[in-house]
Image 1 (cartoon, one colour):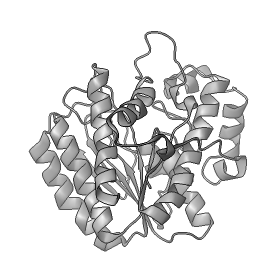
Image 2 (cartoon, rainbow, N blue to C red; image 1 turned 180 degrees about the horizontal axis):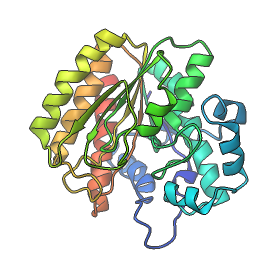
Image 3 (cartoon, rainbow, N blue to C red; image 1 turned 45 degrees about the horizontal axis):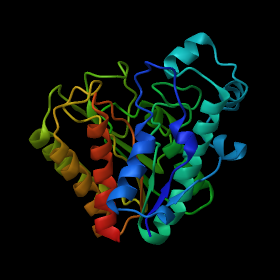
Length: 300
């Protein structure tokens, strides 16, 4: 069974005119239910993560400031969201879903977070619409519980996974792979275990050739027993923040390639959605829905 973590908190409203498309979190499950790709029983509300689990990844001083709404104006600007108690509740629901999905993936092969991919959150700060790093929190929890030995993070959002790279910079148990647009946010990159910076305008052929060249050898090199896949759809040529030139079909081929590798090698994988900022919400929703359909076709 495909388990998908989804909470009403994912749809937390933002002030009118804010550029982050929160409505996608409501529209994606609606579309998947409408077309019959999933049923209501595929969706579950993960609840909220506990504080000790947060502190496996994030510094206590940062968490205290976040929890009590004490971030400075500068820190809030870095996040990009207007801070509120409800937004913090959302932030502690998302990584709980990624953790729960990890257990489901171990049983069924794959699970999906209906949000997540908060890869710009560092140990001690938030950035780029990210408060807590769901993939890092889940990876650290799995390692602390002794459930995995080697983790591979496959980050294919258009923006470098700088927070994830910083969190695991000294941890050989987690290999961070980020393939992103080089001339894009963040201006100052961190150092992942493998960074592939793509040129502005790179389209399907170039993008997919790079992915096919770099990802399969990583499975042999890292020998992961678990994969976290960040499937951002901001690689689309329509994306107003992306600067790459991929088509909807290219995005489909990317997801199919990554997930087929996981399936063929029998490596459990948790998918987090990541970014998507095309002006037309239908483009964002369709690109994300493709990921769910591919996972369903491969495993179920």
